[in-house]
Image 1: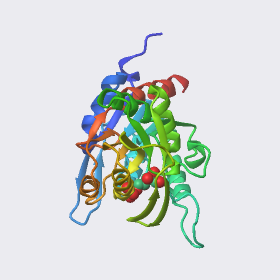
Image 2: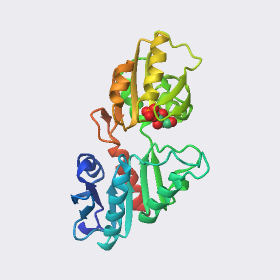
Image 3: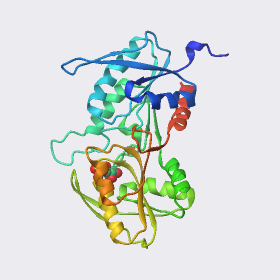
Image 4: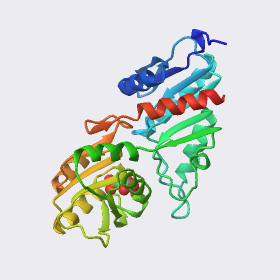
Length: 302
Ligand code: R5P
């Protein structure tokens, strides 16, 4: 039976993600609407959604700057249900609060469990990209929704690197990056290796280079996220000292907190490439097609 126009899934976007929303809507033939946002002088948020919503409604909200966005999502998801959404999907290309997955010291909040449970109470499905899952086996364990889809930026970043550098050496700045580095390297047969890292504080890391011949190589550092930039900067300084020809970087999530870009560039990184999971001038590849395909699979299933 042909579907009625009302049945077309709707993608709702906040103002700051309209460009990325338009790319996903185009790729997936979704209707697109904006969530209007008013900020009161004391900081409270008022949202306004379209008057009626279709059964399949999707909210796009990448969770960089997560603290305010989580409140906006709470308001938007409840309102979407009131306005007719029966099946609600969150597309959060960057999923925050995934790193604190245990209490490292007695009394610490296990943020992943708290935020994951909160999102699962609002949404039926979640699509995200390269979530920082360390000690849990699956995204669904961290965010217990019916459909939890993990995409990766590594293959697209690998394709980009293949067009920009010949015979690059991919290096992950820490052991946790091994999964993405291996995936990206195997796609084009790049050499690859990972560093070891000990984190001493928010901006203090100790990196050691892999036992791999690197002198004279064009290195691309690949990671899921760059936040303060100190991990990448420290790895870059060591690589330069070891005689590499160049260091560029590719990252899924361009968080770049504070002066991170300056820190990275001062260390000697040349080109910086990121996916559009977080809107940033370094965005060089778009996740829109993969997100649209994942949405189609979720909607076909429901
Ligand atoms: C953590 O292990 C991540 O993969 C990144 O390496 C880390 O978040 C980067 O943080 P920063 O840029 O603050 O050094």
